[in-house]
Length: 143
Image (cartoon, rainbow, N blue to C red; front, side, top):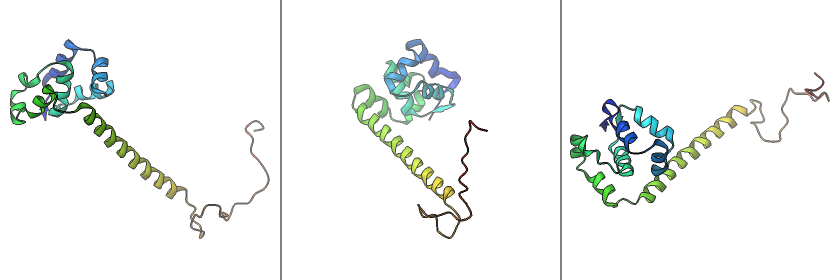
C-alpha cells in the first residue's frame, strides 16, 4: 500500500490528463477515480495502472514502496508484459460473479420473507387460509 500523501497522486494526474480521459483509459468510472484520490492508502497496482495510463513513473515519488515491491509491477506494465485485456476481463468476471452471488442471496431472502407461515409450506399455487374473496375490488379512481 502506498500512502497518498497530500493528494500527490491526484495533483500529478490532473497536470497530465483529465479525469474523464483517465477513466476511459483505465476502464473504470470517474467515481472510482475520485474515491481512489480520497483514500489515504492506495494499492501499488492502482498507482501503477494510473502511472502507466498517464505516462508517469510514480517510483520517483514513492521510491521505498516500489523498492519493496521489487519494481516488478511497474516493469511489467511499462514493458507491456501484462495483458491489459486479460486483466480487464478477469476484473469484470470477478465483479460479475460477486454480483450474481449477491442477487442469488437476495432472491433467496425474498423467497423466505414471502413464504406463507401456514401448514402448506409455501407451495406455489396453494390456497392461503384465512383470506376470503369478497368480490370487491379496489380502484384508485373510485376512492
